[in-house]
Every structure is written in C-alpha cells, then in structure tokens.
Image (cartoon, rainbow, N blue to C red; front, side, top):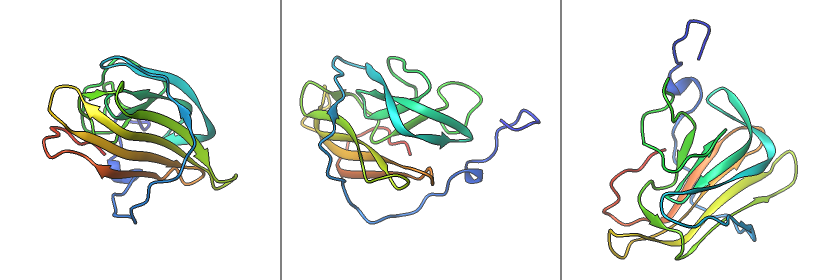
Length: 164
C-alpha cells in the first residue's frame, strides 16, 4: 500500500507480455509436499525477491499449482492482485485441484549471481477428479529484475481458473 492507504495499480509493478517458451532444466529438490490442498515450505530463496512492493526471502509451494510468499496456508482463494485482503502474494501456474502423488513438484536455482533464476517445476502432475488432465510447467523468478515468467507445457482445457 502507498502512504494514502490505497493499493497501486498492477501496472505500477508489472506488465504482461509474451515471451519465448522455455522450460529450464533443473535437477531441483523435491518439494516434499503431499496430500490434497496443502503446501510445502518455507523454501529459502537464493536471492531477495520483490513482489508488489514487498521483499521476500522465502516462499511456499501449494499442491494446486501455485506459490505464495510470506506464509503458507492450506489452499488459496483466487482474486485480483494487488488486494487489500489476503491472499495478496500468490503466483499461479494453473490453479486447479491437482494430485501431487502423481508426477512431481520440484524446485531449484539455475545460473550464477547476479543472474540466477529460481524455478518451481510441476512435471506431469495429474488432476484429482476432473479427469485425465496433466499439468507440466514452471514458475520462474528472476534475480535482480523481479521478473516472473510462467511457462506452461500442458494444461487441460477444463481448467476453471488460471491466474497470472
């Protein structure tokens, strides 16, 4: 929030643009999360990351295809960001009901300072009850620029909510 107590527009912090598709090769760490509608973490970031004016040093990964900063909770309610109400710190690959016992959720860092990329990788994660949907993609956080890239290799057509 700014000094007047109102939230700045999204364009004050981010712009949306297309990018060249590219999953980053990682040998990351298994996120170690299981169960329905849960999260893992906190996972330490290798660099400070600024998201909507707040700097974070760790994050949580949700089993339903998202990450949050600051604190984790079971499942998040999607909304427009920034917002004066929680959650106000979520980045989503494809927010839907995923089954983390099938496929893998890993994370890792590539590159060297000051040009590192922290990658959260969802690889062939199935949906729980919506059918044979498979979700593969990455959320990539860039050191120094605070750029966020979302690369999606496969998401089924019946995904109900997709947040960026």
